[in-house]
Length: 97
Image (cartoon, rainbow, N blue to C red; front, side):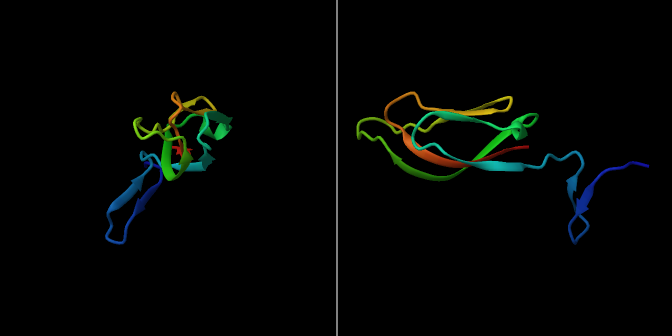
């Protein structure tokens, strides 16, 4: 007999099976319109997801596009970086799945 976790809705439809990947929320980052990084062992072993919560102040020039940070995960380190002077503050939730 197989073992595992299955979740069904009220109509009997399978909603979650042990083979599904569920997200794990880890935290919130406010970039402050500056490059930075953090370390958290909860990042290890999963694929990164982010969700933008808000945007704030930044350095603007009407003739240049606004730059959002590049966000990357390597092991237990989450890094966000800007490559130009025309950057915007980004607030995002992050986790792994």
